[in-house]
Image (cartoon, rainbow, N blue to C red):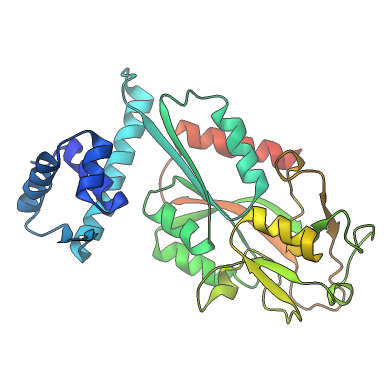
Length: 306
């Protein structure tokens, strides 16, 4: 019979890719951890991991097993959170999101209300496909992303394939995000023609179909100058150093990004493609948010409403 502890051991090994590293993190000897895995594999009738000198990787059967193991652990943690009295279990809560400062701000406000000695918190600003992957594989309980008329069909297909559900938060028109010293910063609105001489900044998605994963609205437009970045700090530096800009929701946190940046309404003009963004969150389909997950969404809604 496979125990919950053995499931937890196996998922930890899959996360770090090494039995030795997992044994250090779990405070268990390497031989004992190896024996635990072997017992599970014997019970299952197949190998969970490929072992090599460089560590371990999941077998196809092992990858599916770990997915279900994470679901069991997640459900157990929610069960204990709701009905248990034990204070010794350190619970986990994770969020994966596109690069939205409001998502980070809501996370900050959430963590302030919880004891970090009792929770392992994680927030991951990452590529769109990784937001979907993290929630699908229960690495994060919630994912934050946007859809538009252009990418909705493709994103919804990915969500259905991964047994995920999209929940609406807000719709907003596109804004041009730039630094306060930009030559166009004092405009009441900005058109594509006015942006022609400045580099368009976007977050790297690293995929041949990246225009479907793009975080920026109107990703299929022909931009004469483009620069890609992979983190928000670099993006802000490029805005100052190169007078770069990006198209965004206009929902920004001055507390986190500073007051040197602003969002100016984008004038779509003759652009045929819709410039409306629908921002929402994704969860595993047919599941109920944990109490902490529910509070996080309420924090986001409060911020967006304000």
